[in-house]
Length: 65
Image 1 (tube, helix red, strand yellow):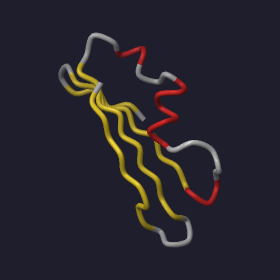
Image 2 (image 1 turned 180 degrees about the vertical axis):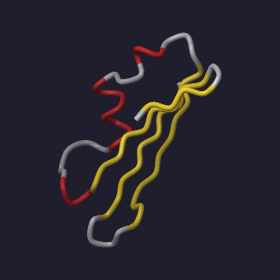
Image 3 (image 1 turned 45 degrees about the vertical axis):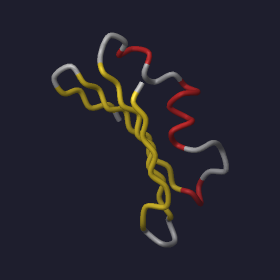
Image 4 (image 1 turned 180 degrees about the horizontal axis):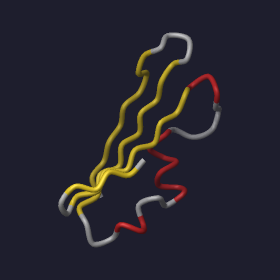
């Protein structure tokens, strides 16, 4: 999900831990280069992971690039 606000862009990736054994959410944003189309803006990458069983956030990471 991408949210554009003024000159800022926040790119979110959501993952359910039990449904994937691949890389972390934040890493996926970087690997798939979701942010490249927003160059020239202030960009924030946000990775949020959930537990299907616990129904809660298990990991939250963010980074400004």
